[in-house]
Length: 266
Ligand SMILES: [Zn+2]
Ligand SMILES: [Zn+2]
Image (cartoon, rainbow, N blue to C red; front, side):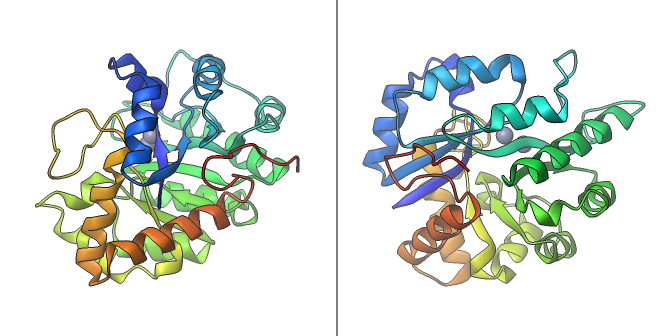
């Protein structure tokens, strides 16, 4: 039993991978729950319709920090959408200074609105951070993100950042990147992680893990991520699967277990 804590099934569909097949393949690999993460408000509606028939898929609502020329929801709008059935988190949000040139103030404003919305609706944050360590931590602190909690997804930063995020009550999620041979420092972070803060994800269709590197990623392959973490930590795949699944349902507390993803009103 495994959970893919972060995937983009609507983007997979665009890669000619029909959701029915993706979900079936995931089930066959023991992945019985997936969190489909929103990247824009424009895409949110179609994404919700896509996942609707599949009870084992939860969703989030938010605007990716890389998104430009997209609708900027205010706090109330995010809170309203977060109240929809199956929506268990706010995101993905955060800061990504890698892809942006010039002024980055708009990213910080967007991130702040998402943190406020998460606090207002009591749902955790899915945080994307790239080349923005200091500002990410600063904004999480300034906006009181510890109250909502959340996860730093697709973690690629150092131990110091992991530790500071965990001090704020955040979880750390590892993707296929941790399986890459040259990810030496990240493997070290994975070894040091306390088990009760650990999550696994694919971020599919991106970042396929070894031994599928370069292919279109899919939730079934979260198994390779968990398997690699198990190897690094000297644990069994079963124990990494069990602990990351428990952590998932602790953090995303309104996700229903396994294949009954309907949420209870909060
Ligand atoms: Zn991301
Ligand atoms: Zn993502």
